[in-house]
Length: 578
Image (cartoon, rainbow, N blue to C red; front, side, top):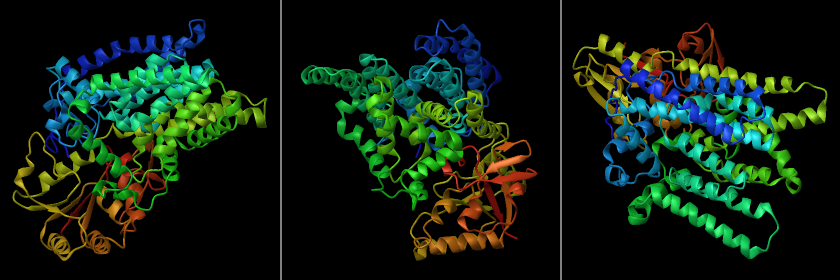
């Protein structure tokens, strides 16, 4: 999928890390100025300044450390892909030259190119990851800005605190993908529209669409804010709306010129992605969504490992209350509700339901959660201290966020499993790996995977005689069969009628071969917090979940989307011939 070689290993020099970290810490001051300007930290509320500084530092502490969380192998395929395109595309060049059918906008590529040019002596992988961490801190400030506009100073602090410790935003801040940048721009556009800064809203919205075409829905609340404001004559409102759309188009064209100069090649990739998301194209990496429910599945995943259960549920309640009170809402609340409702309805109902698709709603969702707590408090017990309600909302999310952060303090399973293979396998021995997954062993400074004969198993192909013959040969002949993550069995076992032979093959090799497990589970002290993909798939389980996570105890969660685990916390099974 990517331009960069699969498994490309990067090195992180301590001097580079200290230099880049110092530059990012120096950029925290503009973040504070941004928060001040947008009303997050009000000039007249000096008592809130210290908590705000502490919150932003907490957000930075959870996002900036451990940029080498995968040992430098670029384990996230989208990150590896974007990095390869950025390294191969000159500034303001056409990304489709380096990557035909490029699925995203040009702005992330150009920003990555600028960062690479600005730090020629540093490894670009870590430069981009640190930039993504800074974007994660910015999102916390933006969540506070939304809370300040829709609620008050106290609500702003609590909303920012929820986003600062939420597990999924912490995870996304460790990858350089288009989603954190697009989320920051879309949220900025909504914030400007709520403050009636329509020109700024249009400009930033155009930049958001230049990251990802699905963010075009941000134009609805931006333009809707014009009509929500006052009851003027229709003609002037239409003229203002047309000017707003024109300004957004010009901003988009400025950073995506090839979308106009070469529209056929530029739009082919985004259109393919749109068809994939709608379920019109059947790709191996989307088959995990077979049988999942629209709207309910994204909300369930947000509750399990996105924002936490209470924040998700109470956020739904807050949004429902706002929707019922539409006629009495202010312009700011209408813009925010319009953005949340339109984007959720357009995105959560798709066939492909990657959790990152809903990341643009996370900053506003935590605000609705605080709003929902206040409604519950006012209706049930007006004398109940507010801090109890906010604390109950925060604690589960904080626990999940800390568990997510603990992942990056352990070595990556692909690196640990690769070292085991290099030590225990003789050169020339056969290793079978799954197609569409990361091949192991990965390159290490002292070892080269070319020393082994690799066989790629066509597991995602239809169950034809040729495929089943290849699988049987691997089971009978190869010394090691590598299941690098749940990508294969986690998706294919959801369609047992389509992959009946493949499911039987998984069952047989797991039962007949010696299984060695390598993983790093999110944990709270002695307790691992994760799901059990083997049990969910109905495959043989030889060791308990706690034993696989190497912890005294394990709390098994319901099935998690593979995006929460396969990049930074995969479960690796090495199936050895007895």
